[in-house]
Structures are given as C-alpha cells and as structure tokens.
Length: 63
Image (cartoon, rainbow, N blue to C red; front, side, top):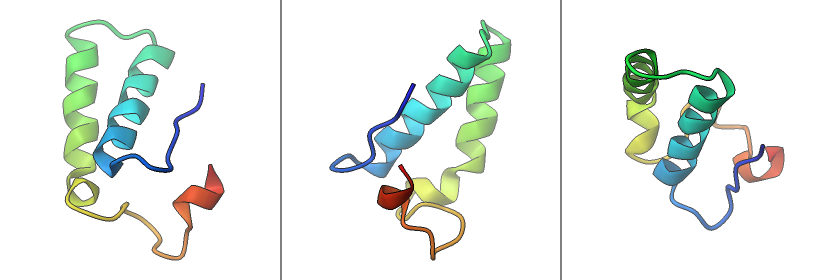
C-alpha cells in the first residue's frame, strides 16, 4: 500500500495514512475509533500547515 503525496492537501495524506494503520492492523470498533482519535490528536500540529517532524525532510522526496 502507498499514499500519494504530491498535489494533495496534507490533511488528506494524513487521513489515508491513519486509515492504512487501522486497516493493516485489522481493527474494528471500538479499537479502530480509539486509534483514529489518538492518531488525529497526535497530528493536530501538522493538520494546520506543514508536516510535523524534522523540517529538513523533503516529504515528496521520501515517498
């Protein structure tokens, strides 16, 4: 599975990544709901703008 980065809003990329984690782990409610909430809470800074983490990393290049 891969997530397309270029030409997409960062929040859409995050949503795909979070759903990938849920799917890869075969989670169902209530575990899937709890994990989604925790992951979205952890990404709250990056939803507002740039990706969180090391600003030297070129996200488009990493993919």
